[in-house]
Length: 152
Image 1 (cartoon, one colour):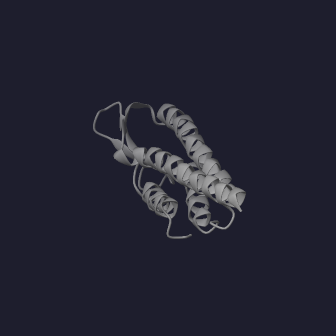
Image 2 (tube, one colour):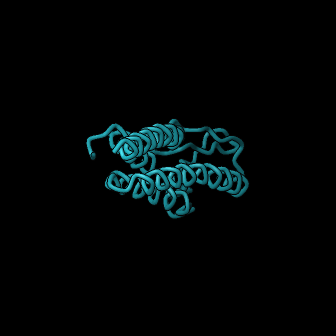
Image 3 (cartoon, helix red, strand yellow):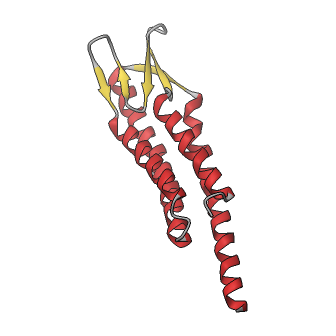
């Protein structure tokens, strides 16, 4: 059962979330228009010496990555696999809520004029879509197994 399509979806989710942990999600542009502060899930580097930590974003992505990877191996308990997939999607939606909170707090702290979004910010959204596809595939397998049990 590990070679099912939902395992492929969950493995892609794991890879996307690992990439999202490493890549910058945007940058703050200061009011002078020249200075840019790169915003990564682990934090924002302000100058050579200072670093503003946003470890909560990194923690949510790391937990979501671990959940997605562990969910692959729960193929014997499909209903638990469904619950873990839904939990993973809720975590990723919470990631976006935490991201916007950190973004607005840091924008005020840095006196930044604008914020440019990075393309890595869409990776958790793609992961939510893939979680939904894996949820459908797992649930379809569960319905098929229940139908086979009913015929016996």
